[in-house]
Length: 159
Image (cartoon, rainbow, N blue to C red):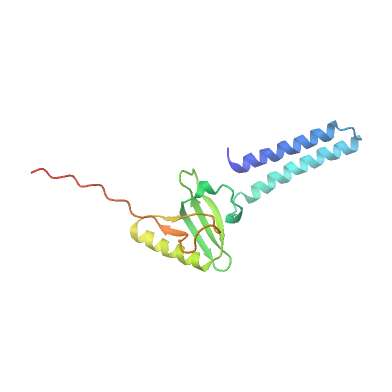
């Protein structure tokens, strides 16, 4: 079960509970019908809202599950000067990459480009250290090229 579906299920359950309370309350019939109509509208707009935002990049500032993307691999990027740094990140052990947008920062953009060049030269991937913009030290780069893995040990020759 994915997150938007879970959130939408919660919205439907809350709307249904509110509608049930409105139905069983000692009120007039027009008021009860109005409560049911409003609950249906809430469910429909909740569904439409979740489906609208599902493909859009999530701002880093609203990410609440940061541990799932700690030290994430950068799958794809798009830099828009003055607007943002758009990233497609895949966390360690994640089943699928997710889209994020960082606020535009020239220092971060330069680090990303440098890490991309270095990763291409080494044949590795670019990784993003942490999503916590405010908690990282200023001297620690946000993006880095993953180090090359050590070659397998050579077999000892027998003489």
